[in-house]
Length: 126
Image (cartoon, rainbow, N blue to C red; front, top):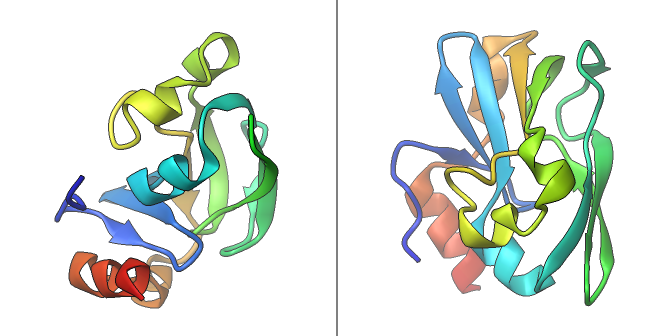
């Protein structure tokens, strides 16, 4: 799957879609493929303040349990409640229905610490 060109990426394989000062966060297709079938997702709570690149939860698959890092910091404004009953949404729709949480950015300059789509493509090709 090609990487969507309207997103920014982290080296830890999360994506960010910016809409003003609100960012939607998910894990990439590469990450969900590497993990395999996802069976549980632990997300930060709404209202929590999270730091860029901090550990904010867990993604559990049939293969492994992996820490979930946030590519952007700020206040969590919404979580994807659909993942509680259907965590496999992350596998089926990593860039749409499988989003994880939304953050109101604490500092819009944090975007400068993320990768453009072409740079992320190089990162996963290595």
